[in-house]
Image (cartoon, rainbow, N blue to C red; front, side, top):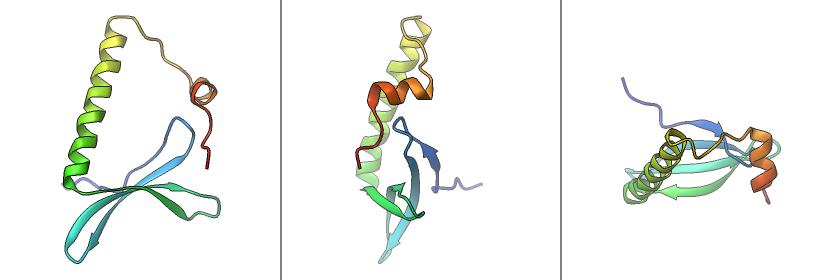
Length: 92
């Protein structure tokens, strides 16, 4: 089974984020976009395989840090509303 590269989620700032595999002239990239009013999207990132690997490394490091804090009992979980209050809504 092939994983679908088109993923949708809401980030901390309540933006709907969409990923899409984009192929141009045989080259594949991963577009990371946010939805904007009216249903269209605005590109945030366009990643090649090297960029995607670096982002994966950063995400894994982040998750390892968060999980370690949770296991040690040093971190609590914030609600979505608390996250928005702490980090703010989308500036765009």
